[in-house]
Image (cartoon, rainbow over all chains, first blue to last red; front, side):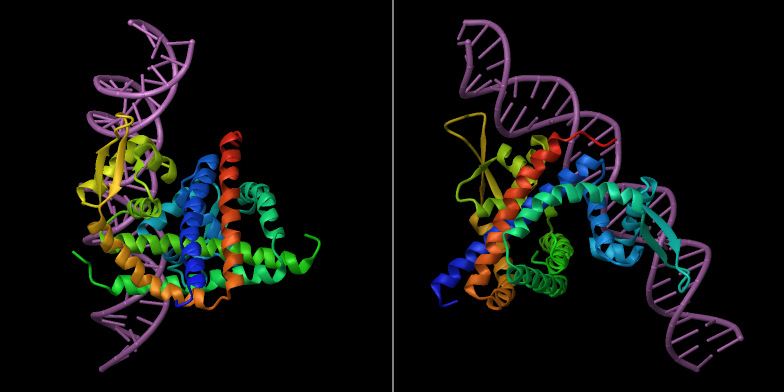
Length: 159
Length: 159
DNA sequence: CGCAGTTCGCTGCGCCACGCAGCGATTTCT
DNA sequence: AGAAATCGCTGCGTGGCGCAGCGAACTGCG
């Protein structure tokens, strides 16, 4: 922190990442509006397709930050709209596996891919090493945010 | 896209950035819970403090993606909680300038700074060049998302 | 085995953030 | 000057969400 040049870069990245995340929220909302869904629903589909295996309702609740009750309603909406299916878990019959429906999700991913072609130009600006740097930074940030959330929950309310 | 190695890196960064953004949503919500505010309110304070000058209600609406009516309610909440003050604009008396209250916002920024010390370790992992790479990527992404939102609004609904 | 204690998903219930439509006040256009 | 657009505010209805509690299923202890 003694290096003023580094400090400037730190400030720059800090404020830029805020705008980056604000931009994402707006983008996600625009996608949701376009598909006639809620931002949370799109978020959920995004997470579902990012995972290789189906998720349980509990896991969805954890990843979205909702209660299990709200997660049930969320899956209800997605199921009614035909984006996912419920499958009982053989190993644990309390659990319900939520699987994305390929044909329906294709509409969403098609939109993403369409928009992704433009995103592609962003990636093309970077070398492979640079891509790795960005990915590594995001992984670190994800880890940190998890521990920070733990700390926040443990901290007393400032009221 | 012909290079399979690049394609893998692309996929990796794509799914990792989704998790990155999901992590942010959770983090933002945890901060909001801790302060007894709504995620939108925190988002608004974040944007307000990032700008050097006070914003109008209309501008807040634009930056958060809400209607002017909802933005009025948002400012109502923040004003009632003592985080901002309303000031009539001399130049245009239709407009209302929303100014953050330094003492109240200090509590929020203090929390951010506290958490920021841990974030510092993330930045310390990177060289200056790498920091620049990440910042550049985010700037590009912000630009792209703006134009993509325009495109989405212009596209017809797939219903 | 059997019986508590825990976990998982689902369901009434009430709250409140949000979009919508319309209002008065003010500015801008012609 | 009047007409049209802009800004912020306000009833109203919708619906996502947390909360508390339910039954079903798994787990651990004696």
